[in-house]
Each structure stands twice: as C-alpha cells, then as structure tokens.
Length: 66
Image 1 (tube, helix red, strand yellow):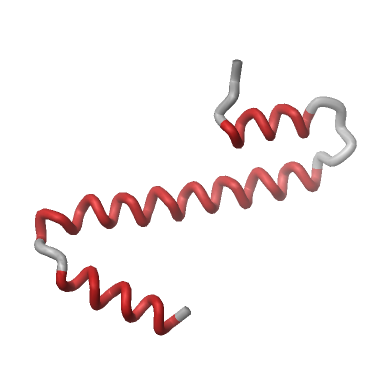
Image 2 (cartoon, rainbow, N blue to C red; image 1 turned 60 degrees about the vertical axis):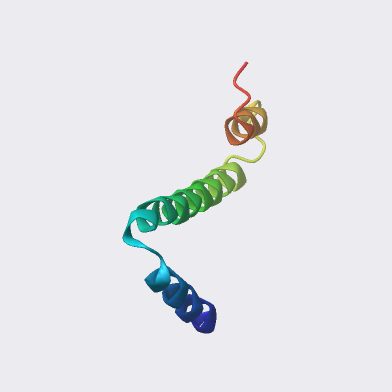
C-alpha cells in the first residue's frame, strides 16, 4: 500500500494546480463514502434481528428512499 501511495503522490505532484482541487475532492468523497458504508455495516450487524432495520439500512445505502 505504501508503494501505491508513493506513486499516487508522484502523480498528484505532476498535476497542474488548477486540476489538483477536483482530484482531491474526488479522493476525499470516495473516502467518506467508504467510511459511511463501513459505519452502516457495523450498525446493521449490531441491529441484526430487529424488525425492519435491514430494509431501512439497505434503502439508505442504495439511496432508494421512496
């Protein structure tokens, strides 16, 4: 993982300044999404067996709130 991180840093260092901000936003958004999914998974494990919780969490995960 460290080698991949070093490679990413080298690639980011080559980007023109005006292209750097969108790339960083994309990376951070994906990281937040991964953290949110992990949190939902933990909640789902803790609430296993409670009626309706799995369906609600799945709806939140997929964005289907209708």
